[in-house]
Image 1 (cartoon, rainbow, N blue to C red):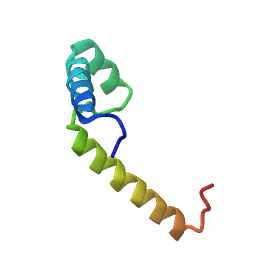
Image 2: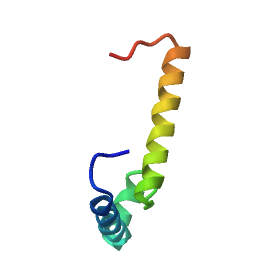
Image 3: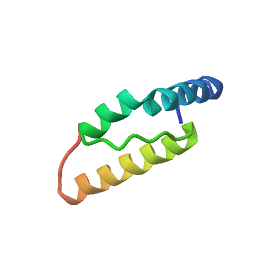
Length: 67
């Protein structure tokens, strides 16, 4: 989890969710091939931990060294 205080992370998440919901921002993200979603700080932490773990496992399986 982040070293940033939870209250700050929650406020940042709420503000980012409002920005992502703006029609112009949403359109740009969709046109870039991104799927705009907002999650709680805890959901984001879980998603990042899962991504990092699976990326490390894939690199190990492919005999790729990550320095």
